[in-house]
Length: 357
Image (cartoon, rainbow, N blue to C red; front, top):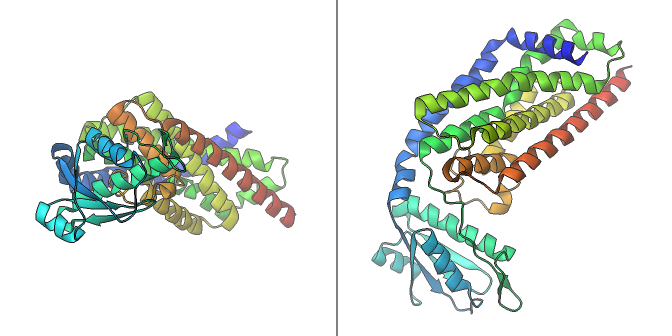
């Protein structure tokens, strides 16, 4: 029966091929625009040294923190110099620094040079990530009450704008997969298909799987084709193509399950597309779909809430480094989201079905 449902749903989607074509064409347009807009910024970061400063404030800083900070900065080709207590704004102007950080015992204050905005944003992200990692205590620098850590931050990999946006925008549009399901929803409403299913013994889980698999089967190959086109048109390098394709497939399944859950709750195709687009936009905003996660100053704790961030970072790092610690979290996040949204969707529709009986 599921095979019949999948076949029928694919036929319904084929009647509105424009939705599928949009997911193929739009990513290419956005990739071309964003990669061109950020080309100079990312190239200047790769080819130039970042110069910044630091200052110790009125409080005593934990032992070992300054050494960890300067060592980590050096590993990432960021030149940092210590300055005595003075006006931070004046130090920035006189020494042409991109930024200056003032350390205190349990906090810091960062000053940015707006004339060197691109380097200032990189330095701001570096300092924020250093503090995030330091708080986690990964290296275990013993300071008594405080355990500090520093790691060589893989959050600043060398990747050009074409590679980055050529990967990230495919992910972003894959998360809007539910657009392709609009043909199924509209046909069910117009032709009373769901009412016919209600009088049969088909379970809600089978009806849901019929939609989930059919939409993913339409969007998944489309995203793979888009990935191939990004390589041919923009020279995008996909690190470990099979693993990257697997992550995108799981991401598409999670996105489809999320979209179906929203549809089952609001029972309106237009409202579903608007709500899903809004949700995905916010996940992409904090996940690096528009501003590279390398330059973004959003708190790391907020980024980690977005499944798009995990997928983006995993794929970007696979491209530029050949490995990523975020592969496991991306896979786990997508699997859990798919299961949770699927269970909620089936539960909601079962309740509605009993209510209409």
